[in-house]
Image (cartoon, rainbow, N blue to C red):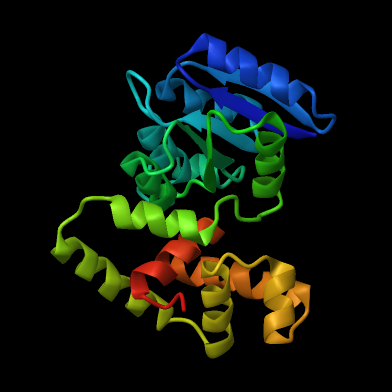
Length: 231
C-alpha cells in the first residue's frame, strides 16, 4: 500500500481528496493536517510514502514544510531523524500551474505538482508515479514556471553558473542521462535513446542525485534547464 499524508487548510478539500484516494486499491490515507507546522510530527509518526501538500496555508505554508522535509544539511534539526527513514516524496497541490511558490517548492525538493481541479484518476496516477520515481510534470510546464517567475538577471546568471558547475561534476554518460531526464524522458525512453539497459539508467540517475546532492528527477531537470543544457 502507498501511504499518503494529506495537508490542506480546507477541510472540504481534504475530505474530497480522502474520498478520491480511498477509491484506489493500493493507496491509503494514513493522516491529515491543516497546517504545515503539523507535517514533521505526522511524518515521524506515520512514515508516509507521499505527502500531498497544499502550497498556500496560514501558519507554516507548504513551501516551508517542503523545505523542512527535504532538507539534507548535516546541520538540519532533522538530520538525525533522516538516518532512520527516507523522507517522503512531496506532491504540491496548487490552483495555478505558474505559481512562483510551486517553482520554489520544486527547487526545495518536491517531486512535482497537481492542480486542485485535476481529474481524480490523474491525481492517483501522480501519487503512484512519484513513488516509482517517475516525473509528474512535463518539461514544458517546468519551462513555463521558470519563465514566469519574476527574478533579477543576476539571480538567473548565478543559477546558470552554479548549474553548469554541477553538470561539470558528471561523467559523459551521466551528463547525457541528466539531459535526457531534463527533457522529460522516462527511464525506458532514456535507455532506448542512449543504448543502455533500464537498470543502467537507474544507476546513472542514482549517481547523479548523489553527486549533485539532489532529491529527485525534477531537481535534475531544473539543473539542466538552469545550465541551458536541455536541447
